[in-house]
Image (tube, rainbow over all chains, first blue to last red; front, side):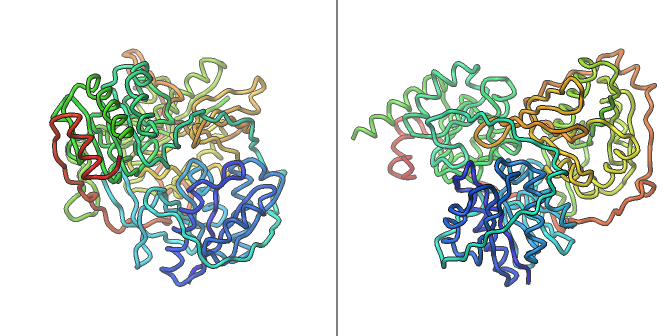
Length: 323
Length: 251
């Protein structure tokens, strides 16, 4: 039996879907070993957040406070999270494989002298995990060969936790060695957008090199994106070519998405792109090359010149909305 | 200043990866190997720091079989000064990589360690962070811009995080891991390739490094991912919208 500690990530004192996905994954892992699932919220003034989380069926929520946790930095957060796991005897620590989770959890693994399984997509009854390797071309069954286990989970592979029995919230001092800290938060420049967040959107429209330049993302693709109320993504080829910034990249080295509807426009379907979107419920591909590999994973394929098809599609979507 | 940079040997990102029928590994016949693309970006960044600040030494390190010499020579041809190859015929997991690199850092005493944010074979994205924690250093992962302070005692690093860009200040020495847009790596020039042949490439058998090599992760089996079935081709935009509305019910 192992008890699980879930790191509940928040962005400036607001939870996104990430925290609840981590909780659900933690609950699944705990169920397999007959252990308890606890959760931790780190920061300053996070008691309210911890209270919110307490409604999701965990055993206990820790509100871990320290001035050094006001902004996320890997070294301070790793100290706080590892100290908590050690103090409370929680042998498994779970987070999502978000930018923060990926940055933080390997340090926690070192502090616990444990092993880390990164970006897992499944939990097996025998205690092994499934995780993609080689840009999603290989699924590995792995186990952590250490008593202390640290796990990051792929956000799109687990559902968010549902409401459950209420838990107690415990205030905990983080016991951080401030003299050992080497990192300082300077600033955060949020990508300003009225559109939904890429990793949480119900519909994603992505553009590839077929769009030819960055300007065409704006004048051809964006009207469709907005007509659908979608998030905009891009292939690595489009990012590499400098058409759009990297935070739009869908793929193994970018964001992994699994929306209800994914529309790939002018994307050939390189392996590493497919790894980032092939779990979408419905996939549409628009490409003028009928041999493009993207059609092998698409539920609906349209062989057409995107510069004609995309504006038409936008018109049709708007017509539908007005019916 | 001295910069230590990793250069992992990985299959070409454009290669088609197939799992061996017995699930013990991938098919390696006819697969071309390259420097991990993110490590290549790290090497480029080290060279740019060297060119900008002058007097820096760029030392490459790789862990792998003798064949990884090829990737180290590539980095030397780009302009790195010398290279270290920790000879290992077996795959090592990120925790073991971090232990080995910690030893290398203790020997070489670099002011900065630059690595790729992840290797495109294992895709863990963990070794750099583990190394930083083992050393008690700060880290800056997902770097898209690195600015060293004039006294070279710290760096401000722009990081590609969820929802935007974050700037952090990290004291040196530190571990910085490169993201895609940090820079565009140069190609090795012909004179560079000629010069690289004469540069020092030191080999150290893994057993002589003096670290615990016991794995923290065991890979039981590899499998190809479940295949998604190709659907239907539609004839027009109108048909597509009808199907998405009436059949798939997603719009």
